[in-house]
Length: 314
Image (cartoon, rainbow, N blue to C red; front, side, top):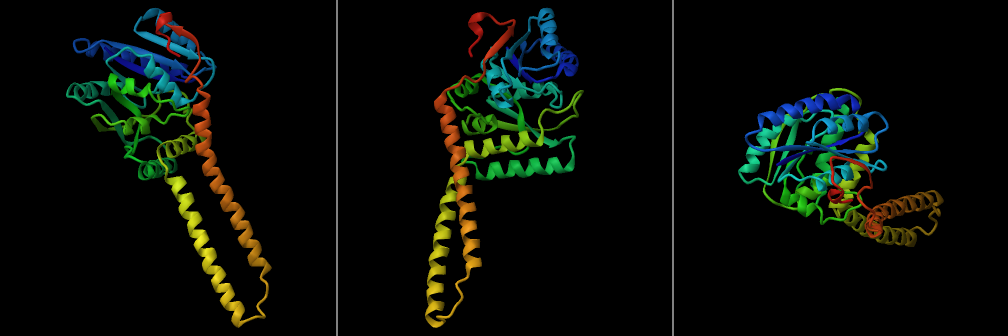
């Protein structure tokens, strides 16, 4: 069995087109594997859950869980992974920007022994500014991460059951799955593809969400910000020592030097601002430690479709 997982948030307009393509895909792959379609509804406020209920009543392959509140995109994906039954799991978005038909290519590579097969976006139908922003963000996260993270790769991937078993051992309150999966090893490969436009509706992933996701990637998978803080502190101490020696030297030969209140004010303001920056960096790491210690559930399930009571794991 191969599980296809789909996190949804207000995607009622896309579900019919998505289900039609998934159904056709299942028919094409009937001789190779069995498919199940697992949806996680991130507490949509449109007709998404009602539409999923209709599909689940008609097709037992459709399984769905609804959260009691919006838990975020990454936690939604992780909760979906945990509730799958397949030997491998394909993650796609409900807007069909990532073609589910690529499962056929991913499946063959999985049969060859790869544990993670991910899509690499050659191009995407977005504005040039947001594309540049994404590319720069991927580059920064990859460069400062403790291990290589694929660039231009999102959450469109097929992963083996071994990877999911490993993911369940992580206790991150704000998971960055691209980084976690890249860091756990196993045999991985990327496949280039062209991303399509949304079938219907508007993207729920705005610039603010992109920035927060990028910060999660940086602070979850890199200690570089902490090291920058340490090196910057040492650098400023060194500059201060040099400046002190230079000032004493000038004072010795020019005892009538002005006191320089303006320069003192500038240095004080700079020091306060820089210390605030360093405290912010430390705060980001402390926040993540605090969230882990709180041991909150990944998500709270409000309703489920085609799940037995013993299958709900959150």
